[in-house]
Amino acid sequence: MKAWQLERLGGSLRLTDQPVPQARAGGVVVRVETSSLMSYMKEYIEGKLPIYHTPDRPFIPGGNGVGYVHATGPRCVASDTGTAHRPVLAFRRPGKCSGFR
Image (cartoon, rainbow, N blue to C red; front, side, top):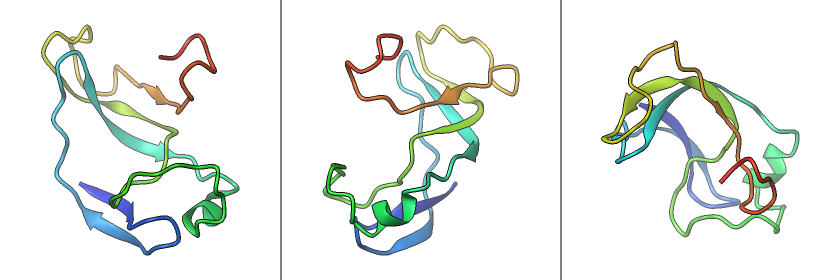
């Protein structure tokens, strides 16, 4: 799969080839079709927003999007894959929204 990968905040942003993730037990893999571009993304990538904590290794920035269920893991409640299941991905900080965990 193709993914924009950031070396580190303030580092280079490159389009990379990544392996397709495998669904873990009780989880799904979502093929993202649309992702939002936040108004502060340029400052985030340049490392000018110190409130964000990032991994100590290259990572794929982002957290909001819409796609479809590409694969399901063992013990997953969803039984089908494809466009019938269209999850919305929304990053929420733990404890800030009771509907998300």
